[in-house]
Amino acid sequence: MAVDTERIPARRRRLGDRLAVLGEREFLWFFTGYTTSLVGSSMAPVAVAFAVLDGGGGGTDLGWVMAARILPVVLVLLAGGVIADRLGSRRVMLGSDLLRGLVQALFAGLLLAGHAPVWAMVALVAVWGVGEGLFMPAFGAIVPGLVRRKELLADANTLLGLSRSVSTVVGPAAAGLLTAAWGPAAVLLVDAVTYGVGAFALAALRLPGRGPSGGGGESMIEDLRAGWSEFASRPWLWLTTAQMGLFNLLVWAPFLVLGPLTAQRDLGGASAWGLVMGVYGAGAVLGGLLMLGRRPARPLAVATVAGLGWALPSGALAAGASLPWVVAGGLVAGVGSAVCGTLYGTTMQEWVPVELLGRLTSFGALGSFVLGPLGLAAAGPLSGRFGIGGVLLLGSVWQLAAGAVVLGIPAVRNRRWEEAPEN
Image (cartoon, rainbow, N blue to C red; front, side, top):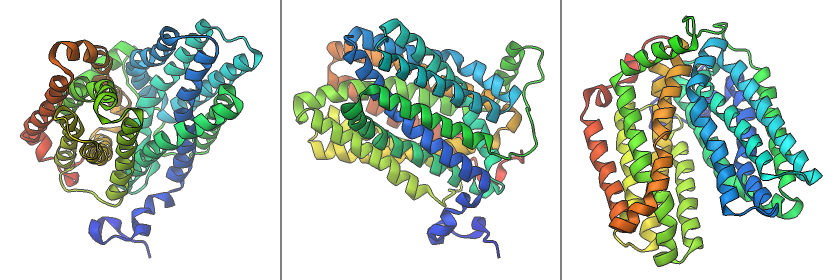
């Protein structure tokens, strides 16, 4: 007899019930392939960095290579959303995995042949970034089609978030060992293989016969305009997107830049910072485990409250707190990141029609991350003028104030699962 997981209170659900989504064939195939490719993707940046440095490059060369990956993602996101809606998410993701796998194989080949100038690395990494920019909107749009029972969608997003959290811990560690033993080319070959696994899993999916549902406009520009109109018509969506964009500008970017400086000056150096970020990752894993099988009645309200935890590590650093307090703040922030990611993603997928998901996901992703590079660039100069503590304190206070404001908006605070439309 089938178990109606929606009727079982979250606190009483057994582990098997909370993992019921793994019984969905399409999700299990996708989860396996996606997790495998994630581990490879999280290994690759370590290999690329050492490929540049081992080839005689310096900090400037490494900066060019890193920027060459990020810029195409931002530039391609909106087009990726339109393409995903027009062609179907699986086709776009399959092409993206094959493209990125080919890039990594070529990169490894150049390293093994001893002919990998910086310009070639920049070009290859830029194409890799194009593939990522196409993949991201399609990923947001494909998840609802992987589960037959709507009540399992939150669990699906939770497990996918867990994969991302675990991969950020496992991937770099494995990459460091492989790079030390066999060089960066070996890591890039492993990454190419993992993309192949992801592509194989995508090819094996049997998704609902919606087909390409995308924009009916005569051009991509018209489809983008239609997508923007739909995005702007949903206050809960553009408000939370704006909140996340300003969070990345004012809170997360300064934390990533000024946190290591504070750790070096006051907390014991790189090992202390590694502990903070490691516990943050562990918190994200814990948050994902806590979210399994749970569907809070007001998802956006819970996500907004959970996001307040991001104020703690910056506030602890600004206050000159000792390392245990900063680590504790990182743990709470990590838990909150998993809760936010699961609930924001599931809300998007349940309240946005499937034919619009690619475009609205791309607008959300662009709005959330486009200000991040500016925050990274400005954190150092601003700290020179206002002090490291002043910049971090501003981020902490902003996070609390912005959360309170967003929580006070009825479109966010009162949104409930049972009000979601049928897609």
